[in-house]
Image 1 (cartoon, rainbow, N blue to C red):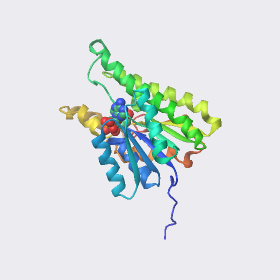
Image 2: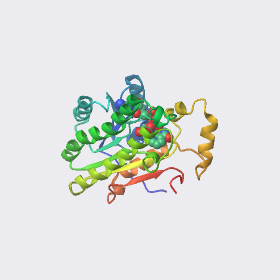
Image 3: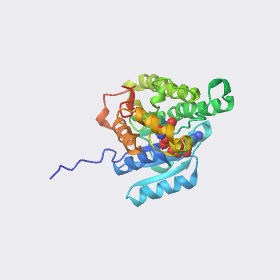
Image 4: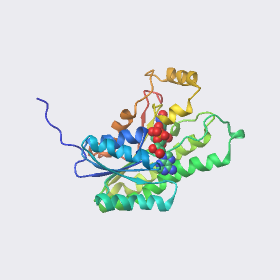
Length: 257
Ligand SMILES: NC(=O)c1ccc[n+]([C@@H]2O[C@H](COP(=O)([O-])OP(=O)(O)OC[C@H]3O[C@@H](n4cnc5c(N)ncnc54)[C@H](O)[C@@H]3O)[C@@H](O)[C@H]2O)c1
């Protein structure tokens, strides 16, 4: 008989931003399956309540806090609410992000879109880490995983704001990893390739041929599933990766190779 493995996050509290859909929800569910109590922080309450229900129905423990990661007071409240509900914070997956308009060359792109992408993808991750870290230190150390993208590792036409924002996520990840390496907090990033979520479905609505062309360029010849990113997030958040900090891990079917 296979040896029983202890749940990797028993007794721990995990916070997931944008945890009410897509990759974030897959990660929230996976943390709960591995014994964590999970705080889901995202904008849409109805979707958040559904996410909490789905975790409870599977025997896990979760709560929702309405959060806009681009807003300082909201992010402070997110961490406060996590501590108020569960008493501690051990691991965080800073996943919330948007793409902006992905079909516009820079000369035609809109500044407001640039500001919004930066506010959510860059300031959102920065603020999340800023307020999570004191709570994680208080818990005796832990781990942060930030969501970058294959767009953080290379260039790509017609979405310069998104590509810039995901490069910035890696800059922050590496810098904050160095700041806290000696104090028990590891900080890493995942760089997913194309993963089938609402974000991608909406971006490619009416452009299915383009999606098929991009998929054909992926060495593994397929897009990813949210659970496949969640598995990597859990590894980076768990003690199994205890010697790993400051890395950008591609999860992309070979796209970076
Ligand atoms: N799907 C892909 O192919 C892919 C590839 C690489 C990276 N990513 C990244 O993965 C992350 C998750 O994307 P997804 O594909 O699951 O998309 P999604 O749109 O399904 O999920 C994004 C989540 O972020 C939340 N969010 C957006 N703005 C927010 C804000 N201001 N405050 C709080 N929450 C906010 C949304 O509510 C949603 O829950 C994003 O950072 C995205 O850039 C996705």
